[in-house]
Image: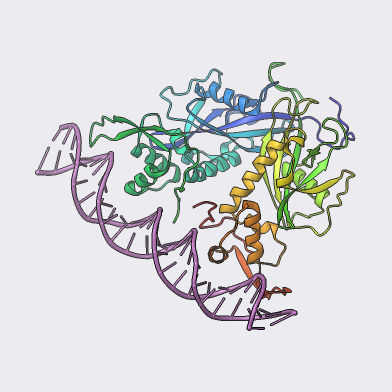
Length: 234
Length: 234
DNA sequence: AGAATAGTGTCTGTGAGACATTATAAG
DNA sequence: CTTATAATGTCTCACAGACACTATTCT
């Protein structure tokens, strides 16, 4: 396509990919889905799953498709949002490639991530990720995704995206404790989340634990914002 | 450049632009910089200023360059952050063009925006923008930028980016009132912002108003986050 | 009974909203 | 003096943090 721009002034056309930072909570740890690169560049290193934007496809649609390919999730019970776009020249040694990073929060998957493509995808606890062994600028992307997820817990209801319905208030609290890395007062936590409008919907059912008192079970409500917010400090 | 992807599966290379939502406060109103399109598509309509990403240029650098071309500002005393990327197929009738939108907050400029390029750029109060007369998907971008700016005032110190240094606490309060659209209690506002660590640095100087008591003048501090936050509601 | 987890009640300090009061300038 | 704006002080209610206490299941 020809545009009214002097030749050589702009970069010309550019390859565009979507990369995903998919978080889940497994074994009481925050984990991220990483794939092992099967070809150059960065052969053998870990990378965020991702792929090219297809013809006629919105960016959101690309992200959803990639997520489905990697996890088998259908997009109904998950949180998926655009994070940021990374386009430094030189971030991909093959040429100018800009990538739109998405953040996805998914519940713990019983299936250990098959994925329709051949690449070996695996969950890695974020606190044991070797950031120096991540391909491209994925260390930067992962770090910014982490901070985004942590801060989002404060003033949105996305924490519930980590929980398999129905879930107890303790389940939800464990999400916060795992993502933030410190314990919360169970009593005050309960007061906050039950007080927030449309955050939790009681199901009437109760858990059947092997030990201890059964817990009331909830579903996600319709609220997107959490008011008043839950503070990390102070 | 050739990549290991089956032909026809991805969109091929794509044009990438950076568009800017530049806000300022003039005449006690929030205003946005718009340019009039001098060519098709959308000839004669208003659009956000923007342009192509150049070879070897980071996205941030492109945004800074465009901002400088439009306003003459040098990037030292302004706030510039990536907002979101818009890439729906069909958003540009000429073909696949994705745009990385940036949000800029600048102080009131004495120079009425010359701009090195020929396009007619002008400040328009956001509450008198005709969203139906904006080119491309710029109505969506502007709306999301507005909401971002409003929410950022709550928990960051960016409001001060609107103020020409040195400024008084009343100047700063007027920023909040204009952006949020409702009055704040002067006394409680002062208590909040003077209590926040490293938000305001006293200069020792005072304003010389034609009427009323002179106000103490401040410079921006180093803090980026505002704690505790200033709430819009409640 | 004892252990383990769920859930309730209560006290206290901080801070936001409301609003009264004082301070410093110009005419 | 009055007028206009800046700055300080005070009262009250709500809520977050801390923590004691009760409830319900299991072995």
